[in-house]
Amino acid sequence: MKLQGKSAIVTGAASGIGKAIADLLAREGAAVAIADLNLEAAQKAAADIEAAGGRAIAVAMDVTNEDAVNSATDEVAKAFGGIDILVSNAGIQIVNPIQNYAFSDWKKMQAIHVDGAFLTTKAALKYMYQDKRGGTVIYMGSVHSHEASPLKSAYVAAKHALLGLARVLAKEGAEYNVRSHVICPGFVRTPLVDKQIPEQAKELGISEEEVIRRVMLGGTVDGVFTTVDDVAQTALFLCAFPSAALTGQSFIVSHGWYMQ
Ligand code: NAD
Image 1: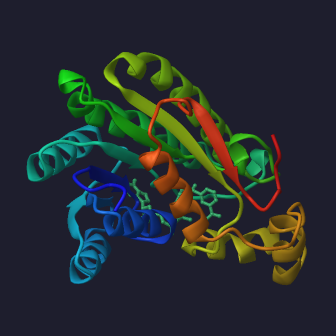
Image 2 (image 1 turned 180 degrees about the vertical axis):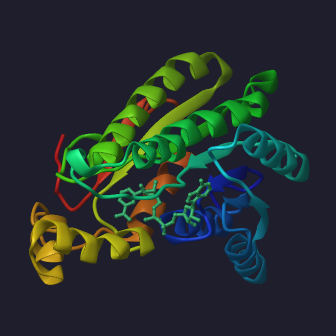
């Protein structure tokens, strides 16, 4: 067990990538808080971890709401005696060309991805900085932290912003033993991606099969989707890494879609 005695908050952990990360961190001995807008699904995810012998709690958290983030983080720190790992993962996707992109949608995207990352970080640092306890903060970026795609102005801008936040945290957090990382997955079949397949097909005037083959997997070296387990294993590797040598870096997990 690589994370025995550690405690973690994973946002957006009621589904998809966040759920897989929470499951793996718990299997490796961490006490895990499933923080999600969808409390019912978060409770189910936490119950599944407990049934498998792990330690987990569910907390309701809208990552765009400062009071909700602070009170849920305080609740987790109280339950687990501190916070060692934050995985800021909650996210959504809204696709549209810029000329049709509603400003309200743009602001919603920035609020969840960028404000959410900032607010959860600030709340967790209160505990990680205490007595220089330290910790690991992982932001869920994307290949779109490095690369652009049509229809995704708000997402690409938000995911690029996470690189900046992670780099500042690497510098500010060092004296408190806090490290930061960005994981940048390629396409992973989760509800977030399944929803955009028909949307992209309609917007681009191509079939759903072509969206998968050309748009989603066309840039990979082998035409294979990245999996939630690929991303979870990367998160575990970073959480368990024994030094700060990797702080401030992004890690692209994409079957070669984007190479740095
Ligand atoms: P998902 O839809 O399966 O899960 C997202 C979770 O976030 C849901 O449980 C949802 O309830 C929660 N959530 C949404 N808004 C929230 C809010 N305001 N506060 C708290 N929780 C909220 O999606 P996923 O594919 O697992 O995506 C997770 C992260 O991974 C996102 O940041 C996404 O941008 C990123 N990502 C996904 C892919 C992919 O291909 N699926 C690729 C790269 C990056």
